[in-house]
Image (cartoon, rainbow, N blue to C red):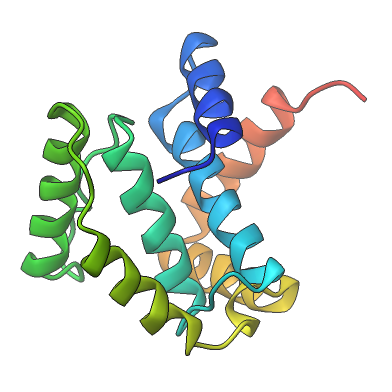
Length: 148
């Protein structure tokens, strides 16, 4: 279950009309904080991000399932299931399953949330998108940057 503060931030983003990916970013940030605090670990930065996105979908953020050639059918199905969970009425989580998940994550490393690991992940994903997409993202960032 996400923290109250994270849910509030995501709802505020939704009220401000920000994109679902921005709303989901709050959940990913929370996940990174949990790993840094030592609550649990992650096998990779990609896994840590995936956990955050899953939490976002389950919390009701209208984030579409990933598409593309290099996304497995299983990943898509899980994302769709998470989104359906987010739309369904709240149910009590299975204590055994929650405990098992946390126990498994506690055995994983903490370096997945390091600045260098996040930076490396960001750069590798950006490289796959190509120069035009990177340029457009940079232009949008400069337009939408908050005045300091």
